[in-house]
Image 1 (cartoon, rainbow, N blue to C red):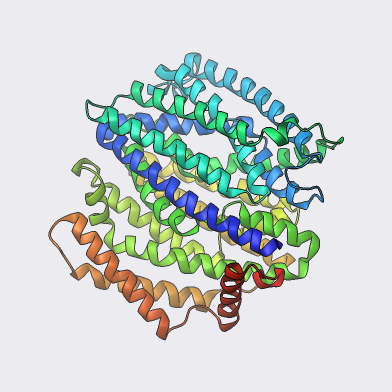
Image 2: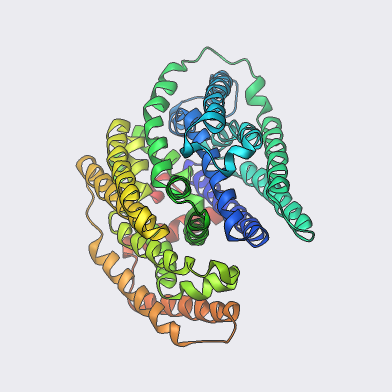
Length: 500
C-alpha cells in the first residue's frame, strides 16, 4: 500500500472516529450540564480543567515527539525495531513525571492558596485517580496514529465513550451527582488504558534493538513549553482563570458550554486531520521537502472551506442552537458562541494548526514555542484585565485575541521557510458569502428551537453548496488533486504526489 493510500485511509478512520467520539462526548456533556445545572456544571468544568493542568505538567511533549519522530524512522511500523524499547521507556518516564506532578497538585489543592481551593479540592482523590488512568493513554494512541493505524484508536475510543454515555444516561434517570460522574469517568479511563495495552502488546513486548531515546525526549521537552501554552490558550486555561478570578462558577460553566458548541463545529469538520497531517508533513520534510508548500496551501483552503461556513452559521444563529441543546439557564452562552465564532473566522485568514504542523515537521520547535509563549502572555494579561469586569465575555475576547496573534506569528514563520501566500481573496469570498447566507436564514422560524435549527441549518448548507458551484472556492488544480485522491483511494492506486 502506498504512503498516500495509507494516509488517506488513516485520515478517514481518524475523521469518522473522532467525529463520532466527540459527538458521544458532547451528548455526555449535555447530560452532565442538564443534570447538574449551571452552578455544579461550573464545578465539574473546574475539575476537568485542573486534570488537564496535571496532564500538561506531566506530558513533557512526548506525544508530539512520537508523532513527529516515529514516521521519520526507517523501521517497520509496530515491528521489532527500536520503537518498542522507546515506547516502554517513554511510558516509564511519563509515569514518573505524573507521580511528581500529582504530588505537587495534591499539596496545592489541600494546603495551597485560594487559586487551588474550591470544589476541586474536595475531590482531590477523584481528580488524581481520573488523571492517573488517562495519563499513559495518549502515548499508546499516538504510537498507533504515527503508524497510520487509526482504525484501532477509533474503535477503542468510541467503545469507551459509548460506555460513558450509557452509564451517564442510566444514572441521569434518578439524578446525576458529581460523585457518580467521577466514578464513571475513572472506570472508563481504566477500561480504555487496558484496551490500548492489549492492542499495543506486540510493540511493548518486542525486545527490539538498542534505540536512542534521548533525542526524542529532548524534542518533547522543548515542545513541552508549547503544551503549556496550548493549555493557557485553550478551553481549560480559560475555565481555570474564570473559576479562580470569579466567586461564582456559573461564568465558567457558560464559557465551557459555548466552547463545546464551537468545538462540535470545528471537530465535526476537521477531526480526521489530527495527527495524520503532522505525520505526513514530517515524512515529506525528510523525503520531499519541495512538496510541503503545495500540501500546506491545499490543506489551508480545505480546512477553511470546511470550518468557515459552520462558524458563520453560529454568528447569527447561536441563540436557537443553545436553546435547542440546553435549559433556559444557559441562554447567556449564545453571545459567547457568537464572539468565539467571529474570532475563529478572522483567525482562518492566517491558517491555524497547519502552521504548527509545518514548523514541527521542519524541526523549528523553538520558533513555535516562542510564538506560543508570546500569545499565552497576551491571553493571561487580557484574562486578568477583562474577566473581573466582563466575566466570560472577557475571556472570549482574551483567548480570541491571543489565538489570532498566534496564527499571525505562525503564518509569518511558515512563510519564511516555504513559498506560500496569504489566502486573502479565497478567505474574503468564503467568509463574506457564508456570513451573508447565515444572516439570510434567520428569517426562517419554525416555532420550536430544535426545528428552527434544523430548518435554518439545512437551508444554509444547501445555499452555501449551491453558491459555491457558481463561485468556486477551490482552485482547478486543487480540484484535480482531490478528484485524483478520491479515485485512487477507491482503486488503491494513489501516487504520493497526489496529496501534495
